[in-house]
Image (cartoon, rainbow, N blue to C red; front, side, top):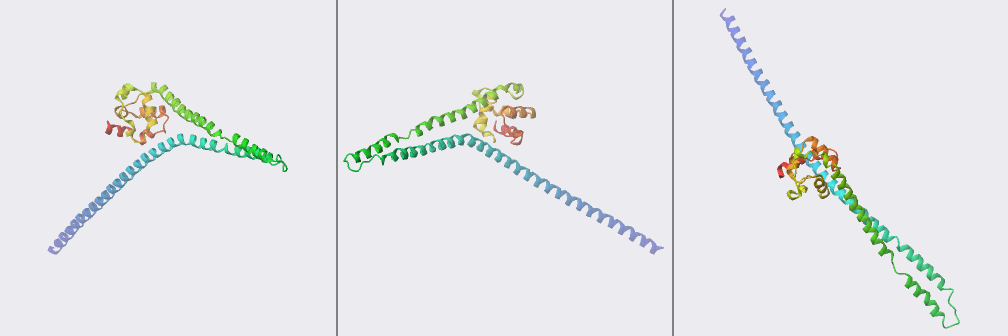
Length: 239
């Protein structure tokens, strides 16, 4: 009987010990899993921050490329048009010099003078006026680029009534902040915001999702770019 009691005590002790060890191993597995989840969350946060920085850089490069596209067509057109008039000058010279050969008379002394006269006339007719004519054309093209910008500003002003200034706040040009400090805002985009009535960081910081969509549409910007570049967060730090 005593041996039976000892065996029962031994079995109950071993069962309790096994239960405790199993509980500890289970807790350790849970802790390991929690640690792995924490590491995955940290890695996700780092990748997300890198993605946001890349989108900001991409927005800056797209803005620079758009500004370059506005300036380059005028230079290409002027160089193409100034280079093209050079060919007719050569053709006119060849046409003028061609009849000079039959006019020479070998026996008379006056023949060399008569041969020289067409060359003098060719020199007199050879000035290059097309270069002077190409300059006003370049000026017209630059004026057209500025005219396009003025048209864009007028379109933006017409949409100012859509913005709820009672919610974001009103400001004047005297209170103007340097909105170009916000990543994604260039000089021309700042002019559009000012034409809309937005001058300060405080106004941008008060944007709601509805304000973002309306301003994005009014300034004719890329859809959703204000949210992706986080103008509101940047403006809160800058104001």
